[in-house]
Image (cartoon, rainbow over the protein chains, first blue to last red):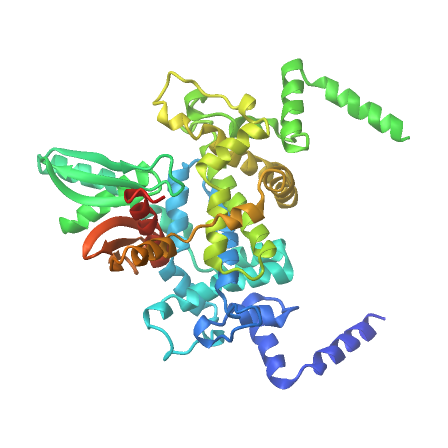
Length: 248
Length: 248
């Protein structure tokens, strides 16, 4: 009985035409599972420069799936780090996550897992800048597509086993997580300079929670930084100041 | 037979001491399900001002769970909006989500679902500013606790059925999603003024993807805005300009 099922499954497979068959195979190589709804995966790898407008005036490209996949990726990586570092504070976890989930890192990852060859875009249309992140954006969109097509459990496994574990060394990333504020304070002590951090603007009540921090060395303003918390804005300001001082 | 099971279940319940029994009940009222691991829920509702240091020098308070819950909430709301608005672009979805998941909104929500009475913090320790968001932060932490204690499916249902659906009207939120850039351009046309948007700084390669936009009216700089995309920075700059002009 099982052999009959396998045969009929094989028969259904052969109903697909040549190019589709190859596409199914290619996405299976990348994701580890044959797509149910191939068009979702094709959308996830189609930049707007290569997309047609649909009947609702919306481009059939990856942006909406990218929005969804970005949220799923962020959550799964958050949980991985939460479990891996049970004695680290949330600031550390947040910084480590942003080292894994950032434009450059996702672009590289996308190429490593072989998604690059599946991404469609036209070089002539639009500016070249928007293509800088096309592979990473498409990877996020692919996560969104897998989530819709295969459910949460499989998309989580895909992120954990195909994206993160083989390509990121948490220990190494953790060891290079820099505390820029400490670094610039140490520098100022070495150089016998006074240093303080000022919060220039604090939108406590605003939706965007944007803070601006200013590093002041020997009463002279140095770097200015931004962030969604005072702590982050200060770190950012410290990092920019270190760059200005050519220390970093 | 079922009556015996109910009885023995009742007996197990009575093994818990009085205050714990009440706590179990209170968290059940808020979340819809009796906690397995009560200490997770207690941690989720404990601000650092009311927390002891554990053996690892880490405060037994809600911050780490908040980091996790924030990611889960963001993802579930992202999916709800993705499905509810199949013909809206990602910019709209992102903006709508930030209207639901922001400090003020989460603080209110926390009070509405009765979490306020369970949150523990000391007023005297630390500054009063940090307590502004204690209820909303604790709600995010509760989501993290539910996720660990009950799994993804239940935490998703909790967010959808207890937090979002009864308390947010997507249609109403969507109708008030303002395009500030359009608004200020319309104003400039009405007033016969020239207007343009300049990107002052664009950290395309930086991890934080921070952009700064400047509104320039009749060649005079007006509001400055920040955001993780040019579009967002422009919207922010337009909104701040409208505030300066007292139009908004």
